[in-house]
Amino acid sequence: MVKYILRGITVLLLVLSVSAAAAAVWIQSPSGERAASRWLTGQLQPSAPGTRVDLEGVKLHWPPTLTAKQAVWSSGDGQPILLLAPAHVSLAGLRFPPGRSGWEAGGPVTRLDLALLDRAIAGGGWKSDGFLHGSVNIRGRDGRMEDIDLKLESERPGGHLNSKSLEGLAEMLPPDDPRRVPLQMLGAKDVFHFDVGKLDLTTEGEHRVLRLFLDGDHLLDLTVRIPKESKLLFRFLGLKSTGEKR
Image (cartoon, rainbow, N blue to C red; front, side, top):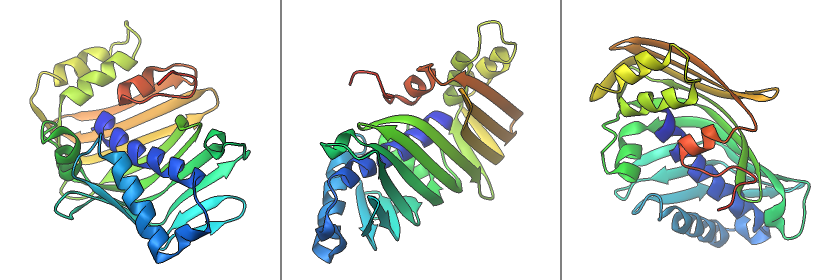
């Protein structure tokens, strides 16, 4: 769940951040809003073919901030995968070209559909389902992430996820950490059912702290602290952080 949820959300927010760099007054008009939505849709096609993004109620503010009443990422048949309401993208330390500015993007996650996310990115291979809500905020520079703050929790009646995503967490722990063994054992299962799930990813000082709580087939309450300079988290997500080559 951790790897694929974060990848789906961060891909959308990274695309939104790039769009903010090119924003102008026209984006607040109906034609500009539609054009921005089409552009965002095009940027997501390599990662999630057939999906689309629709921005509603777009406004441009000063200092440079792009807000939307809501941003909806939908499947090819129009079902919402992810709903951010409202969504925002802010630029800081404006530089030329704008794409080299620092940026921040995020908003309340009204609903994230794990089954549709699975279908859009992995063709159903993650065997995931369920709904999550919470909040997400990402900071970065030059189209790359620097920090992520994420808080998500499941809605009743829970859901399922591919146990391999839990096994992958073991690689983020020290080799002699005893928690690696139960995570690797969970990876031997095909699917993990959870009644309650909570996922927090925050930045605390010089560390990124990942907290995962799952209560279902087994009780898993895990906290992992990763030095900020470590690239492990971004590699786990399949994304690039600031300072890494594309």
